[in-house]
Image (cartoon, rainbow, N blue to C red; front, side):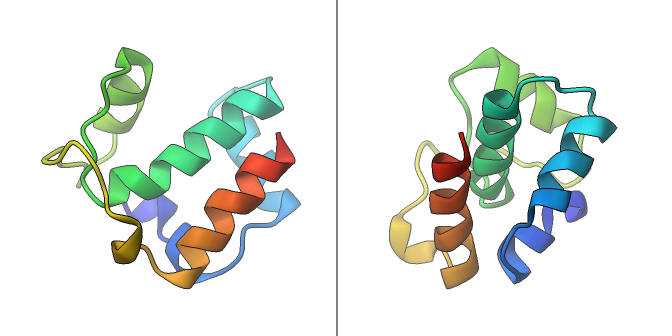
Length: 90
């Protein structure tokens, strides 16, 4: 899941969002924000109930779904800030 490391290491930028949309051919800003927000949880091993997310993240080496929830306390400050920024950007 190294593609998404930056979400844990720094604040997301508009360029990051646009690059993600271009790379994965996602035309909807809302969809892109949802995928990026869920990428933070995927890095922590969240097993998604929604097939679209399970299918998308399973293409990345290192995605190992092993839990049904990720406690907020396990997220670092960048991850927390990026989750909120992506919610706001929708």
